[in-house]
Length: 107
Image (tube, rainbow, N blue to C red):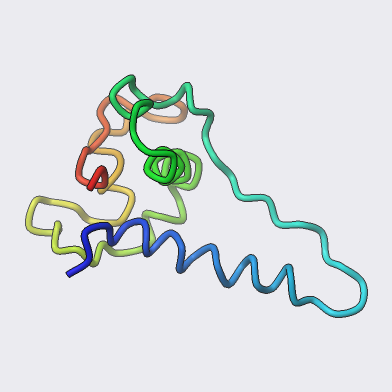
């Protein structure tokens, strides 16, 4: 089993998007911008994490609606995770407020 299934899932979501942008023939479509929350939205212990881990958490924060639609495939449903979003955010206090992050995706 992979040690970082969340990073693999994030790559699986982003690679086709990047490929479509790079392979478009003729007139280039507008670049698709990946939404990331500011690094300041992360708690101190996550700010010291490797860059790819920070980006995964920043992506999760900024793309809650998307990640809530993606089931978790790493077996953490046994700890109550209902979606991929729950692997990053344990308790969501509402728009722009994240009370508790889940360290599950730290690896």
